[in-house]
Amino acid sequence: MTSPDTEYASLATFYRAAWDQLGRGVADAKHPARTPTLATISANGFPAQRTVVLRAADRAAAEVEIHTDTLTPKVEELRENNKAALHVWIRKSKLQLRLEVCFDILTGLDVADRWNAVPPASRISYGTQPVPGQPITGPFDYEKPTEQARFSVLKGHVQQIEVLYLGTKHQRALYKRTDHWCGQWISP
Ligand SMILES: Cc1cc2nc3c(=O)[nH]c(=O)nc-3n(C[C@H](O)[C@H](O)[C@H](O)COP(=O)(O)O)c2cc1C
Image (tube, rainbow, N blue to C red; front, side, top):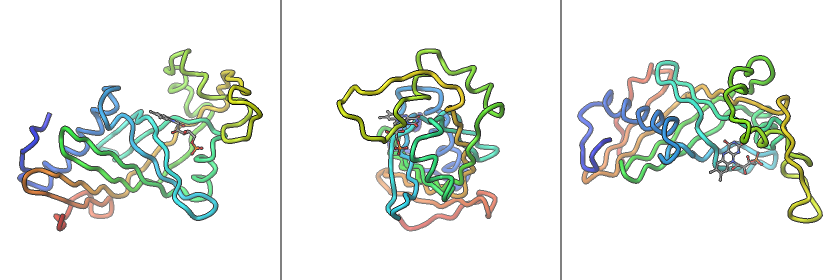
């Protein structure tokens, strides 16, 4: 774990620290990077935000994964516009990560391996009736059957990462896929 007042000597170290945090989020249910905020653009033009669980983070490929119900509004929004953002604040490490991400929506046989790894108790997150977001008469007028066909993996191709470190001396850098993640220090 990065000590709170470490300074990052190079762009490369700073970049690695960002991905290390994402990796920790995947591995550790209690780590703040486990539950980033995902922002999409909704039909009315406003950003729509919600908490999600980070399921995979691959630095070499610059890819992340999120699991969701295929019939949730976020999936419809991503079908319209696959450009989205992820945000995490890791208080202990004083790091804020802001990612621009293009998502592919994977379903069916393409994600059978991921479905097989979902614990049975968690499978009820995929298949809620009525469809999530629909009006219901009373607070518990819904059912949660398990429906594999409703399981989607949102595969995110990271395009840009902005890292902000709020140490004694602030540091901030922008990394882009188009620059092969070389990075650029920017004014905090
Ligand atoms: C801690 C936490 C973790 C969540 N993880 C997920 C997740 O991994 N996938 C998901 O679809 N929804 C997750 N949710 C629920 C979403 O925040 C959201 O309420 C739901 O997916 C509907 O979003 P939408 O209507 O914008 O599509 C989580 C909520 C919380 C509070």
